[in-house]
Picture 1 (cartoon, rainbow, N blue to C red):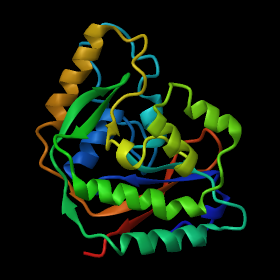
Picture 2 (tube, rainbow, N blue to C red; picture 1 turned 135 degrees about the horizontal axis):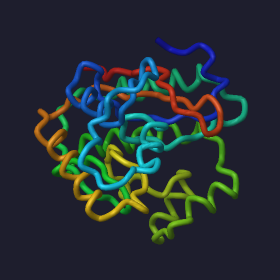
Picture 3 (cartoon, one colour; picture 1 turned 120 degrees about the vertical axis):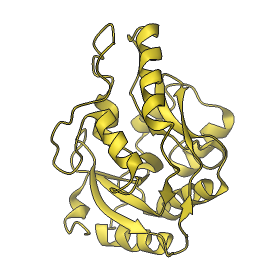
Length: 237
């Protein structure tokens, strides 16, 4: 159901989020240790055998939710409302059909663990590209401070062009589908990183391939708050 007060949200994002009846949805939320519907803690699967505490390693993925980002968080441009965004999402998803994603593998991406496809998927790329290009006209321009923050890790020339044109450096040819399993692993011992990876592999790499059947719109109620599911938009077939 569409959230009627969505216009009041601070930011929005378009996600791939597995269907709630899927094994990937269940496994992901137990991994994070959080029920997204009630906010209640779940028994996390990332416990036991670790030599030290995780020290907030799961905070970022819990805040952003169990997902893969298709359109990075953005504020609505002046004069636009949640209804405009709702209409754009409906139109976008009406142009796509359900497909089965490749199997996913656990990988260390930069300084965090994530699930990534075992092979390139033109279908995933097509949906991600559509989300970026369709929703960009609805997005408010980034403030200079945010542009500088997104340059913080150093960008290639192509990533800088993407940032300037689309408000995010890792889109189109720079896009990599991933579902974050941890936040930054800085301060986590190499031994515990390997244990986390082994645990994740045992949980996620045996799951059946997942259907990609729509796009989830999420909202950040206030700056720094946890993102909330606003609506799931199914593909046309």
